[in-house]
Structures are given as structure tokens and as C-alpha cells.
Image (cartoon, rainbow, N blue to C red):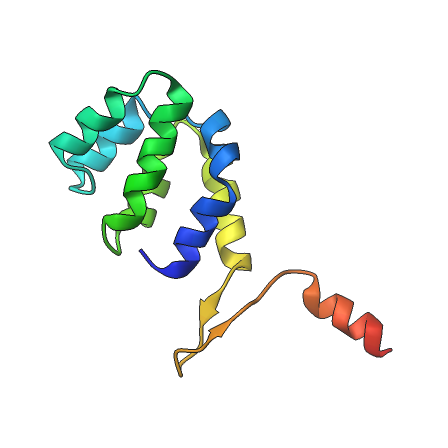
Length: 118
């Protein structure tokens, strides 16, 4: 998982914990796609509350390779508003330029800079 996606999950962690129930289709889809192992699924299911289950998933996902974030998005079929929000926020966050240097592209910042210069 790239740094932008890790940062996105970290920045929306508490919101995701209240909006997403991972115990159903989410972890089963991620298991089916090979993102989660059987032990990951068992570890998530062993958590006592739905928020802790989601937190555990959010702890595991960044370690599961480059396809983990996109698979997580696809697993959110029962939570389309969360999926849409993640996609929108992802577009606003850090992107890599061809030289490999991080560049922050945040909606509204450019307008603010223009206002300051004008």
C-alpha cells in the first residue's frame, strides 16, 4: 500500500470505525481476494466490538501489499457512502511526480494561494 493510502486510512480511522461493520462481507471479500489470511480473519473476529474489529482491520491493511487499498474499496459494497468518500479524499491527497518527489495536491489550496497573491 502506498504512503498516500496509508495516510488516508490513518486520517479517517475514527470515522471508519463508526461507519463500517467489517464482520460481514468486508473481511470475507478481503479473504477471498487474498488480502487477508485465515489468521487475520480470526484475529479480527476475536475482537469484542465492531469498532475494535474495524481498528484491527485498519492496522492489518497497510501491511498487505499494493492491492490492499483497492480491494478494501471494493469490499465496501454495503457502504457506498464510505467508498465514495474514500475515493474523493484519495484524489485530494499526496501524489507522486515522475521524479518520485511527493507533492501535495489539496483542493482549495491553489485558490487560497491565488487569493493571497491577488
